[in-house]
Image (cartoon, each protein chain N blue to C red):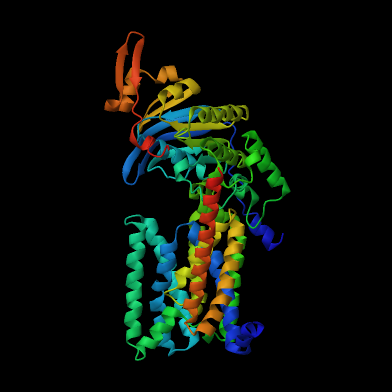
Length: 282
Length: 279
């Protein structure tokens, strides 16, 4: 049994992958708590897709090197986050329509750019589904630094984000800088997406943002507990997912998301059973 | 002063209060909402400590009026002042949400919601300390909710939900409290609870504006009423404001006047958006 757990750890790529999966999972879950509470799941799906042109441009310009891809995705993520923010505040068009249009258009542009590369299928797959086992120690430093920045910002503005998410009008009458806070939250989501790109990729990113936080929301009634629980679920899913990936030989990003989903289904079943028992007890 | 102190001192101090200025003053206020004129040429002064029922048909601009007074919706013409200055500088204005606007599944307890009223007073990067929690507890006692302080907010009844938000306004040290249809969907005992807390607020000198539909209740429970239909139709004691001419101007065809041996019976239109979320 113990060798089952330790055997994969003999590989350095597995150690780095585990660390990356845990770090990324925690950051995604913390930011994801606000994504879930504010009903931004669709944005959480759209935003990762919309950064594809930035990723592709960085890839093309840098000839496949890591750095330009990262900068490309960072610029695209922040630009898109603030762009969607501005577009949805205009209110000329329904918010979900605006997000849908923006996201599909940007994603198409990204695919168009990538399709000009010869090894189109391989590279697209890499961006879409990530490759956590390919994480380098440089990547790890970057994940750690950006992840710490996002986490500290969330902690620093915890009560302001809570008020803004619960009652935007209260935030306005308390004279909190609501537009600034909303944009800051979008930038935090953008940064999170950039560091999660390598681990789960674009297509499954929404699961990392939404599933652990939604699972935690079934299990607790306090915001700070929801954030901690979501982080714990995401970290566990990262580790369990990578072992699953190792032994079942399945894609790592998919394995992590499958574990997250299983956690959610368990919590959901437990929650509905408890509700039914309380109902029967009355 | 360290940099951190400097940043923390950015916590909102709230605009100074001019003692000689009217509590709230609107001058020639016209406001649009989604491109439609919602308020036209509104001119009135509100005195500190007053409790006023704001009545008028659906779409009369009651919510827009509250937003203009709160400084969260700019008038397209005219000016709004709170104690002599722009309301956007004040942190003593509370505008409570309607119950159907609240996400009751949000993972917060009753005391968390009341603590939200303290956020701008606490300042950036600060966590609530013992003194703050004690104040929140006092506010909850004033509305008789302290025993439910640790409950998740969805466990409250309709009347308790209203009282929680009033406690939040108390924690905010609000001097002006605006409530949008707080009585909607409440049964008579719960309505009485809300009114008894409004009495408590009167004792503390809090100025209160309550938007409501029920003219009878407004006349019975409030010393002053403000009758609105985009324009200000009347403002003063209910007996002076609720005249047939005023009511016809405010409600037009939506109001039926029935002459009975005992006097005029007014049948109010409380239709539609009012009761759909009452259950």
